[in-house]
Amino acid sequence: MYASPDFTKFPLPMSRYDSFLVPCFLTVLITWVASRWRSKRKLYQLIPGPKCVSWTYGHMPQLLLSKEYGENEFQWQEKYGPVYSIRGCFGESRLMISDPTTAKFILNSDRFVFGHAQQKMGNVLFGHGNVFLARDDVHRRLRGLMNPSFSANNVRALSPIFEETGRKLVDRWESLGFAGRSVDVFPTLNDATLDITGNAMFSHDFNALEGKSEVARIQRRLVDSVAIPSKFGQLIDAVLPYIPAAVFHFVLNLPVESMRMLRDYKMMTDELGLEMANQQRDTQAFDGLVGALVHDGDLPDPAIGVHLRTMLIAGQDTTGTTFGWILHKLAQMPDYQEKLRQEIQAAGLGEGLEYNNLPLLNAMINEVLRMYCAFPLAERVASEDCILPLSQPITTATGAQVLPSIWGPDAGEFRPSRWLEKEPRKGPALGPHPTGLTFLGGPGVCLGLRFAILTLQVFVAAIVRKYVLTLPKNDSVRPRLAITLMPATADGVQQLPLHIEPVT
Ligand code: HEM
Image (cartoon, rainbow, N blue to C red):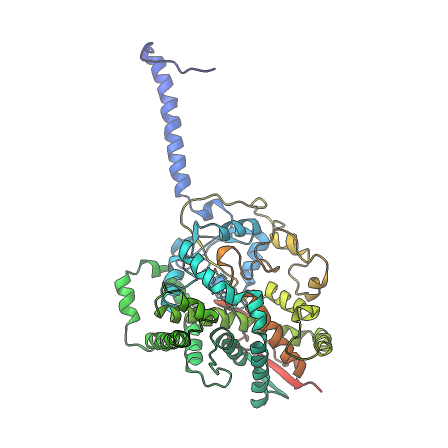
């Protein structure tokens, strides 16, 4: 056992005293300086990552504005592994994480929250009290009210509405004379996904496919105006947290076109939400999502408008872009498309069809969900210091990639047939869907997962039954980030031109 000497009882001679104090003082000083220096060191000084060329923009243009989304990100991941550092605007530190152990930890921890800019934008677009930004008890309560409408049984019970919207989509292609032509099909896909959310979740026909919906038109313009990234937009995002609430409020009320559009959209959807709430009260039906929300006496009526906007926006482009990528891949893979058509034709028509029993259809959907993840960048901020668990050490060399360790050596290849194999994926489950992070996981996992999958199954089957899809000769479509992973041609225009022929 060691006891420290009591120097008051046995004063040390000055020389010995000095020789003891100096190293002691130096040790304390060095430790203090080192700890100060360490704590001042940014993440990018501690964790390897690509070299930064601009303090103002950091790596954001390379990450968000590349001609093809992922051009730089996948190279960085290959070089630095599943956890590496990059810089945001004005020297901000960011970690890029695809390590499943770390991602799972973050998604399940209440210490990680949405960034300030995301919170401000989410509240502006959806309104306060939306389920995305709600936390803890409020979030649990909202999910408790909403989950039953999105359960497997409920979604299955809604399948006649899905089938009907699928038929309307085919009718729309017919009435627009798509057969025999190369056309941009993308707007019709997005209109169909808005209609299905309206019809199935809110018993309201927006008629977006018919081109008659003012809500659809204005929502499209609004989402495009905030989603399409630009260098200027990056700077705005970076300073947004520091803009005082009063200034923010003033800007939102400016008499300019973009703000007027936002106000009109909110007014229209609030009115619609109120109408829906009154209808539920008048009939005392309290069914579906609106019924559950209205029946819960604690929620004020304007909240219906908030949840309506949240579902319409969260469900539209995510499902619409995934649908688009499936059609593009089918056009690229004519043999697969033909086999899929045979599978769908053999299964028969429409209602009562068990879509989960169609292996080629589901393999294609899963592979697109894996490789063209509609929402590829989810952002979180640590609200307090914490230690992140890693499933493997951080390395600076190639070979430390998590994805091949999950999907095998051909992880980067688009190969739907992997889903027909016994074990397409290794590693920990991150959420309820086997693609891992496409729908994220934890308490904020996508509410509309089952809804989205059935939409894709029904829509793809409806189109493939009727039409043969091929790529136009000058196809240059590539993924471009606009919050979701949009198809865009080489000149950067958001569209999906396909050549359409009727099935003979
Ligand atoms: C392929 C289609 C879809 C994909 C890939 C997708 C993906 C996601 C992701 C990644 C999140 C988490 C975002 C985050 O926390 O940062 C999310 C949340 C959410 N999604 Fe989806 N989504 C899809 C379709 C839908 C549909 C059809 C709806 C509703 C009709 C929907 C409603 C929601 C809602 C309400 C949340 C917030 C959940 C919460 O915070 O508790 N999604 N989705």
